[in-house]
Image (cartoon, rainbow, N blue to C red; front, side):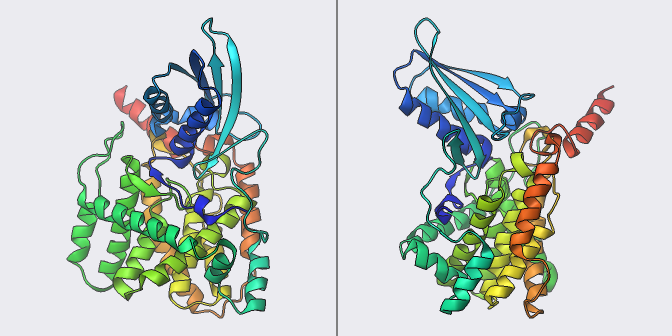
Length: 407
């Protein structure tokens, strides 16, 4: 299992799998074949189906434009390669337009890129790959989950997490300041600024609930606009964890040191889901994105409120379990509807999970590891129309409504 740095990647929205990953793949292929006369890229499956809305072609073309290289883009949304539904093949061509080289890559979520010869993009860091094993280690050594992360990754992990937290806070601040319409055909108005203003006019529970919505909306809207965010675990789910951490910092005066420790635990949870199942909406639906983000935020909140390692595990389990079966059906292929609202409600759910779990003694029937397995199987059973292709669910019914209006 890789470093939690791979869960927390700093980059531009709107999609880790459709923009960050393909951009990285383009850079890798140019390094592999820098002298070709021209290039071609073919996008397959989910990557092609929602690529326009996710700015996939723009992200790839920008890489080639910077190098002043010629590129053509071909779309094959109906063709799914066996390895992963987010597939793309690069071709290097000579002056006669004959193929010199080709390379197929897969953007598997969170900005990670693999090919047919690799299982992981990075070196294995964690030998223990289930939460049950990690809990046993923590119990035997009298440690908390964040201490296990430090034990494996070293003290330098805190420097990286400091940077992550700084970018998260900045995304919230900028998102709360911005107004206007998000880019794309939906012409969706930003809501974070107005929610924040209204929240400050409330008091008590209404103020707090409104504020958690405002924080999550701020980051999600920044992501939708192509702003700088942190994958947690993906761009499309990047608003959940920062909102919960900012909320706890603001209302419960949590220190930066404790926030960073919560980030470490949350990163471990996301890492386990990524390794044992998937965080890619194109592979398992939105349960792998927003569901994992909720599990991460639930675990972080419970740790910050003094929960034991078993209560943290319970909270993470609930975060994922309560999103089982969640489809990925973005309208117009944009990371806006229903993505943005899902971030806001997942953040609120994470706080509910924390409260529920802290009232318990941490004992429960279904383990986190079992839910991860269930999520993977559920994702496998979902038809492709519900996995980031915009050919099913809300995307289709919204489109049908617009067609009826125009008739």
